[in-house]
Structures are given as C-alpha cells and as structure tokens.
Image 1 (cartoon, helix red, strand yellow):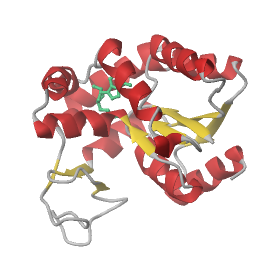
Image 2: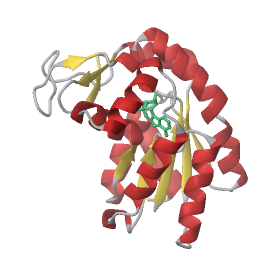
Image 3: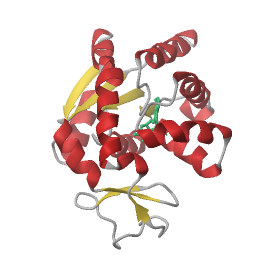
Image 4: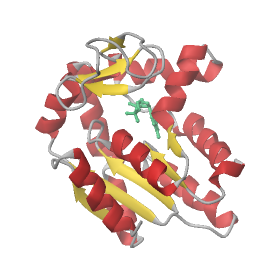
Length: 214
Ligand code: AMP
C-alpha cells in the first residue's frame, strides 16, 4: 500500500504516519526527518537544506526529489510505504508519479488531514522535539513521561527553530500557496480522502484506517 500524507505543518501528519506505518508494516518516509538527520550529521545536503528550513521555506525540488526516489527504490519499500511531508509541490508530485509509472506503479491513497490555521499555531507553540533522536512531543497532547526529557533516549526536549511562531506563520503561508494545490491534484486522480484533523489523535487514526481499508 502506497500512501501520501497531506496537510499543513502541525496537522499531525508525522504522528499519524508513524502509527499507520506500524499497523500496515510499511516504512514511514519523512523528508523533514531525513533533512534533519543530514543537518545533524553535517552532510552537504544538510548544509544546503538548513538555511531553507530555518526560515520555514521549502528545500528546492531538485534536492528533494532525488532523495525520495532513491529511498522508495530500497527493498523495504517493495510492499508499499507512507510518505510524510512529500510531495509538497506540484512538480514533486509529478516527479513521484513519473518515477512510479516507470515501474508500472501508482500511489494508492492521499490522505489530507484538515485543520484550521489557528489550531496549528496553538499546537506548534507546544511542540517539543528531542535534540538527540528527533522524537516529537506536545506539552499538552503528548507530554513526555519526564518533563523536558525524551522518553526514547532521555535527550533534552527543545522548540525546533522551524516551530517558532514567526517561522510557523511563514510555513503556513508556504503551505497554502505551494502545497495546498496538491489536494485538488490528488482529488482529480481519484485517490484523495479528507480527514478532520481537529479530532482526538485516535479518532483521526481510525478515520484514516477506514479510508484506506486497512
Ligand atoms: P516537516 O518536518 O515535514 O514539517 O519538514 C520540515 C522542513 O523541511 C520544511 O519546512 C521544509 O523546509 C523541509 N522539507 C521537508 N519536506 C520537504 C519537501 N517535500 N520539499 C521541500 N522542503 C521540504
């Protein structure tokens, strides 16, 4: 099963994608996580991506597309995968579609998690990420067991630069202009399902599972 998660930054794509990946036994591919890992390792890609990410802008398509095409060609993607944060532009969606077509394949589902901007601004102010392993938390909705420390590795929890209020506003505006058109794009392809992202995390998950018939 090949699934795309759509929705504004902070809509809960990452959390849901992880849960779906686990339930369906397919890899969770987050371009944001891949870029952050590259930044941490100090790779050339990480150095190039950081400037865009810190400002809340998109990393250019030419840096992003090859990375994803390479990742989905790995053996663990044979039975499907879930894309979280990709595609984010129409050219990215077209590159994905062309790459899959070459292999006689196509995406099965695009899930759009719908949520008003103001809810996102409120949510992201409470988001915290582990500085060591990148696991994400929320001060109110998904608090860590020990305040300020990651459940997974004990690392310190921080407010990511790209979750800071001014950056969040820019990311939302980038989302509306560059990513939102994908909703119509996948609707026209007949694979779009819309889910109300203001519901409880478990209710959102149940709605997605129903939409993909898993
Ligand atoms: P995320 O964790 O998915 O919210 O991504 C964090 C940041 O990584 C975004 O604000 C972008 O700067 C960059 N990024 C992630 N995925 C993409 C993509 N598909 N295209 C361009 N930039 C991306």
